[in-house]
Image (cartoon, rainbow, N blue to C red; front, side, top):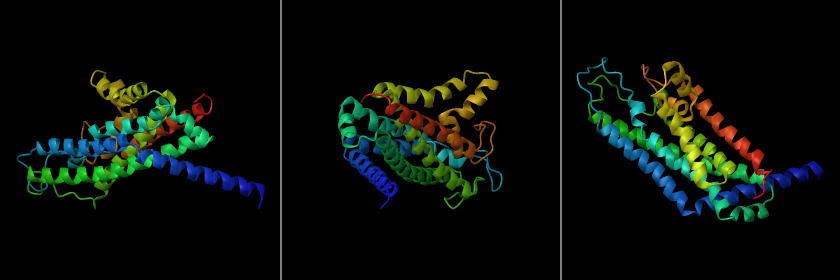
Length: 276
């Protein structure tokens, strides 16, 4: 066997070992289950509250209002995303706070491999749970909205996951949550401090949304287009409305994926240059 083949085999074994180790650590920590439960529960609860309180009057077949019933059905993700961000931050900062990161690096000195494996595991779990949550929100929201008059008789044809735009919105919401987890994990690896990392993540997610209401339009529009949450949740839009986020679904997801990629790349660069 050649030297290159042996090196490849060792690298592959090291990567698989890191993935297994990070999976074991994530699934054996109680906070993981609480965070995922909150992600699903809060998202579905707020979707039920918001759609259950909506109503429409005066519509007729082919002449409904301008409500985006797909977007409305996924509104709970706006609130549930905080749990996904906190889970991703804790996945890395808890090891620094307990000094267990030293044990991790002693077992596998390839620090960048460890961080990449942790990002893959955390991002994959959030993506999977986020997809299940988005589907549940959509189904619950559509059921409640149809009962409140958002039906064919009210001018709103039935929407299912067989509809391309609805499926794109649901899957895109899960991709948004997974990308947010990547970003949050990257910030946590850079900050190495739970409170500081959560503060930075929540400020990045929420501050632009708050600031938009106080800025002139020429500043608010580009901020909304390139903010993490503003761009990312544009994927949920399926109806053209004046108050839509001014970026397309593909462009919006590209922005939020870029946030996650940059955070992870910076974390990969810093993790090998600092003491544990």
